[in-house]
Length: 480
Image (cartoon, rainbow, N blue to C red):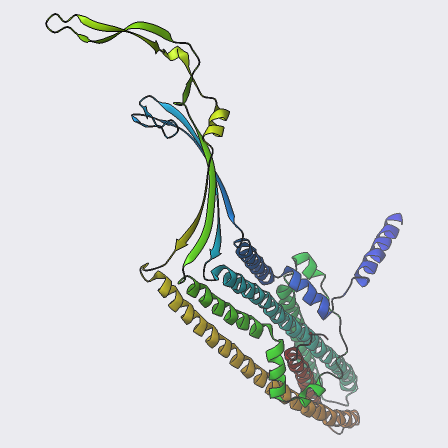
Protein backbone atom coordinates (compact mmCIF):
# COMPACT_ATOMS: atom_id res chain seq x y z
CA UNK A 1 0.00 0.00 0.00
CA UNK A 2 2.87 2.33 0.90
CA UNK A 3 4.58 1.49 -2.41
CA UNK A 4 1.42 2.35 -4.35
CA UNK A 5 1.14 5.70 -2.52
CA UNK A 6 4.75 6.58 -3.33
CA UNK A 7 4.18 5.73 -6.98
CA UNK A 8 1.06 7.87 -7.07
CA UNK A 9 2.88 10.81 -5.49
CA UNK A 10 5.77 10.47 -7.95
CA UNK A 11 3.37 10.23 -10.87
CA UNK A 12 1.53 13.35 -9.71
CA UNK A 13 4.76 15.32 -9.37
CA UNK A 14 5.88 14.17 -12.82
CA UNK A 15 2.57 15.25 -14.31
CA UNK A 16 2.87 18.64 -12.65
CA UNK A 17 6.36 19.00 -14.10
CA UNK A 18 5.09 18.29 -17.58
CA UNK A 19 2.16 20.63 -17.23
CA UNK A 20 4.44 23.38 -15.90
CA UNK A 21 6.83 22.95 -18.80
CA UNK A 22 7.32 26.30 -20.47
CA UNK A 23 6.27 26.53 -24.10
CA UNK A 24 8.30 28.41 -26.67
CA UNK A 25 6.88 31.35 -28.59
CA UNK A 26 8.44 32.49 -31.85
CA UNK A 27 10.51 35.25 -30.23
CA UNK A 28 12.02 32.82 -27.74
CA UNK A 29 12.88 30.44 -30.59
CA UNK A 30 14.55 33.26 -32.51
CA UNK A 31 16.51 34.46 -29.47
CA UNK A 32 17.77 30.96 -28.77
CA UNK A 33 18.76 30.33 -32.40
CA UNK A 34 20.58 33.63 -32.76
CA UNK A 35 22.57 32.86 -29.64
CA UNK A 36 23.52 29.29 -30.55
CA UNK A 37 23.52 29.12 -34.34
CA UNK A 38 27.00 28.32 -35.70
CA UNK A 39 26.66 30.62 -38.71
CA UNK A 40 25.89 33.49 -36.35
CA UNK A 41 28.92 32.64 -34.24
CA UNK A 42 31.15 32.56 -37.32
CA UNK A 43 29.83 35.94 -38.41
CA UNK A 44 30.62 37.36 -34.97
CA UNK A 45 34.19 36.09 -35.36
CA UNK A 46 34.40 37.97 -38.66
CA UNK A 47 33.41 41.15 -36.81
CA UNK A 48 36.13 40.53 -34.24
CA UNK A 49 38.69 40.06 -37.02
CA UNK A 50 37.58 43.33 -38.59
CA UNK A 51 37.84 45.10 -35.22
CA UNK A 52 41.39 43.79 -34.79
CA UNK A 53 42.33 45.05 -38.25
CA UNK A 54 40.80 48.46 -37.51
CA UNK A 55 42.60 48.76 -34.18
CA UNK A 56 45.90 47.78 -35.76
CA UNK A 57 45.52 50.35 -38.54
CA UNK A 58 44.87 53.09 -35.96
CA UNK A 59 47.95 52.18 -33.92
CA UNK A 60 49.98 52.22 -37.15
CA UNK A 61 49.80 56.04 -36.95
CA UNK A 62 52.01 55.95 -33.85
CA UNK A 63 55.82 55.71 -33.98
CA UNK A 64 57.24 52.21 -33.84
CA UNK A 65 59.77 51.30 -31.18
CA UNK A 66 62.11 48.31 -31.32
CA UNK A 67 64.89 47.09 -29.07
CA UNK A 68 67.65 44.66 -30.02
CA UNK A 69 70.38 42.91 -28.08
CA UNK A 70 73.15 40.57 -29.29
CA UNK A 71 75.60 38.33 -27.50
CA UNK A 72 78.37 36.53 -29.38
CA UNK A 73 82.02 35.72 -29.98
CA UNK A 74 84.24 36.97 -32.80
CA UNK A 75 87.14 34.90 -34.15
CA UNK A 76 90.07 35.70 -36.43
CA UNK A 77 91.70 38.99 -37.32
CA UNK A 78 89.45 41.98 -37.61
CA UNK A 79 89.06 45.53 -36.40
CA UNK A 80 87.21 45.69 -33.12
CA UNK A 81 84.43 48.29 -33.54
CA UNK A 82 84.74 49.52 -29.97
CA UNK A 83 88.57 49.83 -29.75
CA UNK A 84 89.22 50.48 -33.46
CA UNK A 85 92.25 48.18 -33.19
CA UNK A 86 93.13 44.88 -34.77
CA UNK A 87 92.15 41.88 -32.70
CA UNK A 88 93.16 38.30 -33.44
CA UNK A 89 92.04 36.44 -30.36
CA UNK A 90 88.52 35.32 -29.54
CA UNK A 91 86.53 38.33 -28.34
CA UNK A 92 83.17 38.44 -26.51
CA UNK A 93 80.87 41.21 -27.77
CA UNK A 94 77.49 42.61 -26.75
CA UNK A 95 75.37 45.11 -28.68
CA UNK A 96 72.35 46.96 -27.29
CA UNK A 97 70.22 48.94 -29.70
CA UNK A 98 66.87 50.77 -29.66
CA UNK A 99 65.28 52.47 -32.66
CA UNK A 100 62.08 54.29 -33.54
CA UNK A 101 60.56 55.73 -36.70
CA UNK A 102 57.51 57.80 -37.58
CA UNK A 103 55.89 58.31 -40.97
CA UNK A 104 55.41 62.02 -41.58
CA UNK A 105 53.88 61.70 -45.02
CA UNK A 106 53.02 58.56 -46.98
CA UNK A 107 50.33 59.76 -49.36
CA UNK A 108 47.68 59.46 -46.60
CA UNK A 109 47.80 55.68 -47.03
CA UNK A 110 47.51 54.98 -43.31
CA UNK A 111 44.56 57.35 -42.84
CA UNK A 112 42.75 55.82 -45.80
CA UNK A 113 43.55 52.33 -44.50
CA UNK A 114 41.75 53.22 -41.27
CA UNK A 115 38.68 54.41 -43.19
CA UNK A 116 38.72 51.27 -45.33
CA UNK A 117 38.91 49.03 -42.27
CA UNK A 118 36.07 50.98 -40.63
CA UNK A 119 33.89 50.30 -43.67
CA UNK A 120 34.89 46.62 -43.64
CA UNK A 121 33.95 46.30 -39.98
CA UNK A 122 30.55 47.95 -40.50
CA UNK A 123 29.98 45.63 -43.48
CA UNK A 124 30.74 42.64 -41.25
CA UNK A 125 28.16 43.87 -38.74
CA UNK A 126 25.55 44.10 -41.50
CA UNK A 127 26.53 40.59 -42.64
CA UNK A 128 25.67 39.37 -39.15
CA UNK A 129 22.28 41.09 -39.31
CA UNK A 130 21.64 39.49 -42.71
CA UNK A 131 22.32 36.03 -41.30
CA UNK A 132 20.11 36.77 -38.29
CA UNK A 133 17.28 37.89 -40.59
CA UNK A 134 17.58 34.75 -42.72
CA UNK A 135 17.44 32.55 -39.63
CA UNK A 136 14.44 34.47 -38.30
CA UNK A 137 12.55 33.92 -41.56
CA UNK A 138 13.43 30.22 -41.57
CA UNK A 139 12.20 29.90 -37.99
CA UNK A 140 8.98 31.77 -38.78
CA UNK A 141 8.23 29.42 -41.68
CA UNK A 142 9.06 26.32 -39.63
CA UNK A 143 6.97 27.61 -36.71
CA UNK A 144 3.97 28.24 -38.97
CA UNK A 145 4.35 24.79 -40.53
CA UNK A 146 3.91 23.24 -37.09
CA UNK A 147 0.82 25.35 -36.44
CA UNK A 148 -0.61 24.47 -39.86
CA UNK A 149 0.00 20.76 -39.40
CA UNK A 150 -1.53 20.86 -35.92
CA UNK A 151 -4.64 22.49 -37.32
CA UNK A 152 -4.83 19.93 -40.12
CA UNK A 153 -4.43 17.16 -37.54
CA UNK A 154 -7.29 18.64 -35.52
CA UNK A 155 -9.47 18.64 -38.65
CA UNK A 156 -8.51 15.03 -39.36
CA UNK A 157 -9.29 14.05 -35.77
CA UNK A 158 -12.67 15.76 -35.90
CA UNK A 159 -13.60 13.98 -39.13
CA UNK A 160 -12.40 10.64 -37.78
CA UNK A 161 -14.50 11.08 -34.64
CA UNK A 162 -17.53 11.87 -36.79
CA UNK A 163 -16.91 8.87 -39.03
CA UNK A 164 -16.48 6.54 -36.05
CA UNK A 165 -19.87 7.72 -34.79
CA UNK A 166 -21.20 7.00 -38.26
CA UNK A 167 -19.72 3.48 -38.11
CA UNK A 168 -21.34 2.85 -34.73
CA UNK A 169 -24.73 4.08 -35.98
CA UNK A 170 -24.45 2.02 -39.17
CA UNK A 171 -23.55 -1.07 -37.13
CA UNK A 172 -26.77 -0.70 -35.15
CA UNK A 173 -28.87 -0.29 -38.29
CA UNK A 174 -27.18 -3.26 -40.00
CA UNK A 175 -27.75 -5.42 -36.93
CA UNK A 176 -31.40 -4.35 -36.99
CA UNK A 177 -31.64 -5.32 -40.64
CA UNK A 178 -32.43 -1.80 -41.78
CA UNK A 179 -29.25 -1.40 -43.84
CA UNK A 180 -27.26 -3.88 -45.92
CA UNK A 181 -23.85 -5.17 -44.72
CA UNK A 182 -22.09 -3.31 -47.54
CA UNK A 183 -23.08 0.01 -46.01
CA UNK A 184 -21.12 -0.91 -42.88
CA UNK A 185 -18.11 -1.89 -44.97
CA UNK A 186 -18.22 1.48 -46.70
CA UNK A 187 -18.32 3.31 -43.36
CA UNK A 188 -15.47 1.22 -41.94
CA UNK A 189 -13.37 1.83 -45.07
CA UNK A 190 -13.97 5.56 -44.71
CA UNK A 191 -12.93 5.41 -41.04
CA UNK A 192 -9.74 3.53 -41.94
CA UNK A 193 -8.88 6.13 -44.57
CA UNK A 194 -9.47 8.99 -42.17
CA UNK A 195 -7.39 7.25 -39.51
CA UNK A 196 -4.57 7.12 -42.06
CA UNK A 197 -5.10 10.81 -42.76
CA UNK A 198 -4.77 11.53 -39.04
CA UNK A 199 -1.56 9.50 -38.79
CA UNK A 200 -0.11 11.38 -41.76
CA UNK A 201 -1.09 14.70 -40.20
CA UNK A 202 0.55 13.74 -36.89
CA UNK A 203 3.68 12.61 -38.75
CA UNK A 204 3.78 15.99 -40.48
CA UNK A 205 3.74 17.66 -37.04
CA UNK A 206 6.69 15.55 -35.92
CA UNK A 207 8.69 16.38 -39.05
CA UNK A 208 7.88 20.09 -38.84
CA UNK A 209 8.84 20.08 -35.18
CA UNK A 210 12.11 18.34 -36.01
CA UNK A 211 12.82 20.92 -38.70
CA UNK A 212 12.30 23.77 -36.25
CA UNK A 213 14.48 22.24 -33.53
CA UNK A 214 17.25 21.59 -36.05
CA UNK A 215 17.21 25.18 -37.26
CA UNK A 216 17.40 26.27 -33.63
CA UNK A 217 20.15 23.66 -33.05
CA UNK A 218 18.55 22.42 -29.85
CA UNK A 219 20.26 19.63 -27.95
CA UNK A 220 18.50 16.22 -28.04
CA UNK A 221 17.34 16.72 -24.45
CA UNK A 222 15.91 20.16 -25.20
CA UNK A 223 14.27 18.95 -28.42
CA UNK A 224 12.58 16.07 -26.58
CA UNK A 225 10.69 18.47 -24.31
CA UNK A 226 10.15 21.16 -26.94
CA UNK A 227 6.64 22.55 -27.46
CA UNK A 228 5.46 25.81 -29.03
CA UNK A 229 2.82 28.38 -28.17
CA UNK A 230 -0.22 28.64 -30.44
CA UNK A 231 -0.77 32.37 -31.13
CA UNK A 232 -3.91 34.06 -32.39
CA UNK A 233 -3.61 34.55 -36.16
CA UNK A 234 -7.17 35.59 -36.89
CA UNK A 235 -6.42 39.00 -38.44
CA UNK A 236 -2.91 39.05 -39.83
CA UNK A 237 -1.38 41.30 -42.42
CA UNK A 238 -4.13 42.32 -44.86
CA UNK A 239 -3.30 46.01 -44.37
CA UNK A 240 0.26 45.44 -45.65
CA UNK A 241 -1.07 45.04 -49.17
CA UNK A 242 -2.22 48.66 -49.08
CA UNK A 243 1.41 49.49 -49.89
CA UNK A 244 2.64 49.08 -53.45
CA UNK A 245 5.55 46.79 -54.29
CA UNK A 246 7.68 49.83 -55.17
CA UNK A 247 6.90 51.48 -51.81
CA UNK A 248 8.01 48.34 -50.01
CA UNK A 249 11.17 48.11 -52.14
CA UNK A 250 12.15 51.71 -51.40
CA UNK A 251 11.74 51.06 -47.68
CA UNK A 252 13.53 47.71 -47.92
CA UNK A 253 16.51 49.30 -49.65
CA UNK A 254 16.89 51.54 -46.62
CA UNK A 255 16.34 48.79 -44.06
CA UNK A 256 17.83 45.57 -45.42
CA UNK A 257 21.33 44.84 -44.04
CA UNK A 258 22.51 43.09 -47.20
CA UNK A 259 22.16 46.41 -49.05
CA UNK A 260 24.03 48.24 -46.30
CA UNK A 261 26.78 45.60 -46.34
CA UNK A 262 27.52 45.89 -50.06
CA UNK A 263 27.31 49.68 -49.82
CA UNK A 264 29.96 49.64 -47.10
CA UNK A 265 32.13 47.33 -49.19
CA UNK A 266 31.80 49.75 -52.08
CA UNK A 267 33.04 52.49 -49.75
CA UNK A 268 35.89 50.24 -48.60
CA UNK A 269 36.90 49.65 -52.23
CA UNK A 270 37.05 53.41 -52.82
CA UNK A 271 39.38 53.88 -49.85
CA UNK A 272 41.42 50.90 -50.97
CA UNK A 273 42.02 52.72 -54.26
CA UNK A 274 43.14 55.80 -52.32
CA UNK A 275 45.57 53.63 -50.36
CA UNK A 276 47.03 52.28 -53.59
CA UNK A 277 47.34 55.78 -55.07
CA UNK A 278 49.10 56.94 -51.90
CA UNK A 279 51.92 54.50 -52.56
CA UNK A 280 52.80 56.47 -55.71
CA UNK A 281 53.77 59.51 -53.61
CA UNK A 282 57.16 60.06 -51.90
CA UNK A 283 57.42 58.78 -48.35
CA UNK A 284 58.90 61.04 -45.68
CA UNK A 285 59.75 59.59 -42.29
CA UNK A 286 61.67 60.51 -39.17
CA UNK A 287 63.83 57.92 -37.46
CA UNK A 288 66.16 57.82 -34.52
CA UNK A 289 68.17 55.34 -32.53
CA UNK A 290 70.31 54.94 -29.44
CA UNK A 291 72.79 52.17 -28.79
CA UNK A 292 75.87 50.98 -27.01
CA UNK A 293 78.05 47.92 -26.81
CA UNK A 294 80.64 45.88 -25.00
CA UNK A 295 83.84 44.22 -26.27
CA UNK A 296 86.15 41.85 -24.48
CA UNK A 297 89.07 43.42 -26.41
CA UNK A 298 88.52 46.79 -24.76
CA UNK A 299 91.08 46.67 -21.94
CA UNK A 300 92.61 49.17 -19.49
CA UNK A 301 96.03 49.20 -17.72
CA UNK A 302 95.94 48.33 -14.05
CA UNK A 303 99.61 47.31 -13.46
CA UNK A 304 102.82 49.42 -13.34
CA UNK A 305 104.75 47.47 -15.98
CA UNK A 306 108.61 47.26 -16.04
CA UNK A 307 111.16 50.00 -16.94
CA UNK A 308 114.00 49.23 -19.35
CA UNK A 309 117.18 51.52 -19.44
CA UNK A 310 118.84 50.18 -22.58
CA UNK A 311 116.90 49.86 -25.76
CA UNK A 312 118.51 48.12 -28.79
CA UNK A 313 118.54 50.34 -31.86
CA UNK A 314 120.67 48.27 -34.27
CA UNK A 315 123.82 46.16 -34.83
CA UNK A 316 127.51 46.78 -35.62
CA UNK A 317 128.20 45.98 -39.24
CA UNK A 318 130.51 43.07 -39.58
CA UNK A 319 130.51 41.92 -35.97
CA UNK A 320 126.80 41.92 -35.35
CA UNK A 321 127.21 43.39 -31.90
CA UNK A 322 124.09 45.13 -30.63
CA UNK A 323 123.96 48.87 -30.51
CA UNK A 324 121.89 50.24 -27.60
CA UNK A 325 120.87 53.58 -26.29
CA UNK A 326 119.86 54.68 -22.86
CA UNK A 327 116.06 55.21 -22.85
CA UNK A 328 113.28 54.58 -20.38
CA UNK A 329 110.38 52.42 -21.77
CA UNK A 330 107.60 50.76 -19.84
CA UNK A 331 106.89 47.19 -20.84
CA UNK A 332 103.47 45.70 -19.90
CA UNK A 333 102.59 42.06 -19.54
CA UNK A 334 99.10 40.51 -19.83
CA UNK A 335 98.78 40.65 -16.10
CA UNK A 336 99.00 44.44 -16.22
CA UNK A 337 95.67 44.66 -18.20
CA UNK A 338 92.03 43.95 -17.41
CA UNK A 339 88.88 44.15 -19.53
CA UNK A 340 86.97 47.38 -19.11
CA UNK A 341 83.78 46.85 -17.08
CA UNK A 342 80.43 46.31 -18.77
CA UNK A 343 78.81 49.42 -17.28
CA UNK A 344 81.77 51.64 -18.15
CA UNK A 345 81.77 50.43 -21.74
CA UNK A 346 78.02 51.01 -22.04
CA UNK A 347 78.54 54.56 -20.85
CA UNK A 348 81.60 55.21 -23.05
CA UNK A 349 80.12 53.63 -26.19
CA UNK A 350 76.66 55.21 -25.89
CA UNK A 351 75.64 56.73 -29.25
CA UNK A 352 72.55 58.50 -30.67
CA UNK A 353 71.19 59.02 -34.16
CA UNK A 354 68.29 61.00 -35.65
CA UNK A 355 67.52 61.45 -39.33
CA UNK A 356 64.91 62.31 -41.92
CA UNK A 357 64.31 59.70 -44.61
CA UNK A 358 62.81 60.49 -47.99
CA UNK A 359 61.90 57.66 -50.35
CA UNK A 360 60.82 58.64 -53.86
CA UNK A 361 59.32 55.78 -55.88
CA UNK A 362 60.79 55.87 -59.38
CA UNK A 363 60.58 52.34 -60.68
CA UNK A 364 59.61 49.23 -58.74
CA UNK A 365 58.61 46.77 -61.40
CA UNK A 366 55.18 48.43 -61.84
CA UNK A 367 54.14 46.99 -58.47
CA UNK A 368 52.57 50.23 -57.20
CA UNK A 369 50.88 50.99 -60.52
CA UNK A 370 49.57 47.41 -60.74
CA UNK A 371 48.11 47.74 -57.25
CA UNK A 372 46.30 50.89 -58.37
CA UNK A 373 44.85 49.12 -61.40
CA UNK A 374 43.73 46.16 -59.27
CA UNK A 375 42.09 48.55 -56.80
CA UNK A 376 40.20 50.21 -59.66
CA UNK A 377 38.92 46.82 -60.82
CA UNK A 378 37.88 45.95 -57.26
CA UNK A 379 35.98 49.22 -57.00
CA UNK A 380 34.10 48.50 -60.23
CA UNK A 381 33.39 44.98 -58.98
CA UNK A 382 31.99 46.40 -55.72
CA UNK A 383 29.73 48.76 -57.68
CA UNK A 384 28.45 45.89 -59.82
CA UNK A 385 27.85 43.78 -56.71
CA UNK A 386 25.88 46.63 -55.17
CA UNK A 387 23.72 46.88 -58.32
CA UNK A 388 23.21 43.10 -58.36
CA UNK A 389 22.13 42.95 -54.72
CA UNK A 390 19.82 45.94 -55.20
CA UNK A 391 18.21 44.33 -58.25
CA UNK A 392 17.85 41.01 -56.45
CA UNK A 393 16.17 42.77 -53.54
CA UNK A 394 13.73 44.43 -55.94
CA UNK A 395 12.98 41.09 -57.58
CA UNK A 396 12.47 39.47 -54.16
CA UNK A 397 10.14 42.23 -52.99
CA UNK A 398 8.10 42.09 -56.19
CA UNK A 399 7.85 38.30 -55.93
CA UNK A 400 6.93 38.47 -52.24
CA UNK A 401 4.26 41.08 -52.97
CA UNK A 402 2.77 38.98 -55.77
CA UNK A 403 2.89 35.85 -53.57
CA UNK A 404 1.18 37.67 -50.70
CA UNK A 405 -1.55 38.98 -52.95
CA UNK A 406 -2.11 35.54 -54.48
CA UNK A 407 -2.12 33.97 -51.01
CA UNK A 408 -4.72 36.48 -49.82
CA UNK A 409 -6.96 35.72 -52.80
CA UNK A 410 -6.56 31.99 -52.22
CA UNK A 411 -7.37 32.38 -48.55
CA UNK A 412 -10.50 34.44 -49.25
CA UNK A 413 -11.64 31.93 -51.86
CA UNK A 414 -10.96 29.04 -49.48
CA UNK A 415 -13.03 30.74 -46.77
CA UNK A 416 -15.97 31.05 -49.17
CA UNK A 417 -15.57 27.41 -50.19
CA UNK A 418 -15.60 26.26 -46.56
CA UNK A 419 -18.70 28.31 -45.81
CA UNK A 420 -20.52 26.85 -48.81
CA UNK A 421 -19.40 23.27 -48.18
CA UNK A 422 -20.24 23.57 -44.49
CA UNK A 423 -23.86 24.26 -45.45
CA UNK A 424 -23.72 21.36 -47.88
CA UNK A 425 -22.24 19.11 -45.20
CA UNK A 426 -24.87 20.05 -42.61
CA UNK A 427 -27.63 19.46 -45.14
CA UNK A 428 -26.06 16.16 -46.16
CA UNK A 429 -25.86 15.12 -42.51
CA UNK A 430 -29.61 15.66 -42.14
CA UNK A 431 -30.39 13.77 -45.33
CA UNK A 432 -28.08 10.93 -44.29
CA UNK A 433 -29.75 10.68 -40.89
CA UNK A 434 -33.11 10.55 -42.66
CA UNK A 435 -31.85 7.81 -44.97
CA UNK A 436 -32.28 9.92 -48.11
CA UNK A 437 -28.64 9.46 -49.15
CA UNK A 438 -26.38 6.48 -48.56
CA UNK A 439 -22.99 6.26 -46.86
CA UNK A 440 -20.98 6.67 -50.07
CA UNK A 441 -22.83 9.84 -50.99
CA UNK A 442 -22.46 11.29 -47.49
CA UNK A 443 -18.76 10.41 -47.34
CA UNK A 444 -18.25 12.19 -50.64
CA UNK A 445 -19.85 15.35 -49.21
CA UNK A 446 -17.82 15.04 -46.02
CA UNK A 447 -14.56 14.53 -47.95
CA UNK A 448 -15.19 17.67 -49.97
CA UNK A 449 -15.81 19.59 -46.76
CA UNK A 450 -12.66 18.19 -45.11
CA UNK A 451 -10.54 19.01 -48.14
CA UNK A 452 -11.91 22.54 -48.15
CA UNK A 453 -11.03 22.94 -44.47
CA UNK A 454 -7.47 21.70 -45.07
CA UNK A 455 -7.13 23.95 -48.10
CA UNK A 456 -8.28 26.94 -46.08
CA UNK A 457 -5.82 26.08 -43.31
CA UNK A 458 -2.93 25.79 -45.76
CA UNK A 459 -3.84 29.02 -47.54
CA UNK A 460 -4.24 30.84 -44.21
CA UNK A 461 -0.75 29.97 -42.99
CA UNK A 462 0.70 30.62 -46.43
CA UNK A 463 -0.88 34.07 -46.38
CA UNK A 464 0.41 34.74 -42.85
CA UNK A 465 3.96 33.83 -43.86
CA UNK A 466 3.81 35.88 -47.05
CA UNK A 467 2.65 38.95 -45.15
CA UNK A 468 5.38 38.40 -42.57
CA UNK A 469 7.91 38.60 -45.38
CA UNK A 470 6.45 41.93 -46.51
CA UNK A 471 6.50 43.19 -42.94
CA UNK A 472 10.11 42.06 -42.70
CA UNK A 473 11.03 44.03 -45.84
CA UNK A 474 9.50 47.10 -44.23
CA UNK A 475 12.08 46.75 -41.46
CA UNK A 476 9.74 45.41 -38.78
CA UNK A 477 10.72 42.50 -36.51
CA UNK A 478 9.15 39.12 -37.20
CA UNK A 479 6.47 38.38 -34.62
CA UNK A 480 3.40 36.17 -34.30
